[in-house]
Length: 289
Image (cartoon, rainbow, N blue to C red; front, side, top):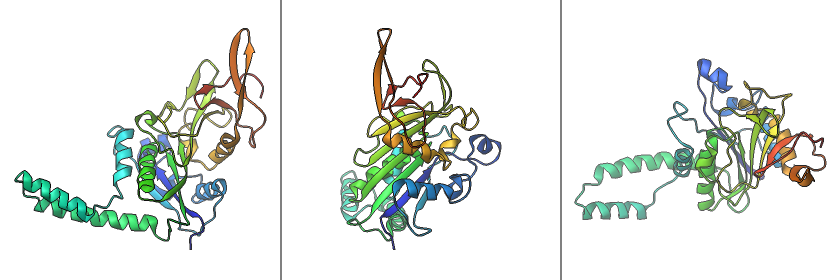
């Protein structure tokens, strides 16, 4: 029995061999996430304040074929469409339009019916055990999974489901799409070295902001844990929830120095993460915080 809801984990690009090793992503699904299987899911439940039976949560693969053959907008549309089931009204409209144009619609109708069955099966599996009045979905995405997860969130909301929280980690092509405004939404990027004036960040994504719908967007500066080789893949490690706990409560303030206004973190956060950017505001992290 489901208590509060399901987490949907949407992985990004993965590949076998050298490319996957370099990216830190050589398999999709549950093994894509965390330092060991199940660790990321457990940390996610703790952050979201839920606890469900093993096997409740869902894992979706949003990887492109080659990493360059789709855009964030393409993946958003795929997330919107992969679970859509066409009803009788759609079929009637399709046939009427085909008849008006003198087109035989039979073969296309059969193809759509076949696709409908697959979508219905996937939708039933995704929503199994869920009740629209009592349960919520939570969506966590990584890299290429961002666009897909945003599209899926929008689809579920249109279907009458509650999407409580969305977390976008190291989002690829973030400036290609919007994420729905209804859920509480976090976007997190990582930076491994640099300064206030020059940043060395995620070489895969460049840490662009999703166009709209994000409530708390932050970039963490952590040269102790991060480097060029792990900066993109680290955000699918369970330790990323320490950054997210800090992002959840982060506050900032400004001060004046030599006639210029600077922004910085104020107070302490649970894990004392240092942020170089928050909601589009550059933070001066050379100043002790």
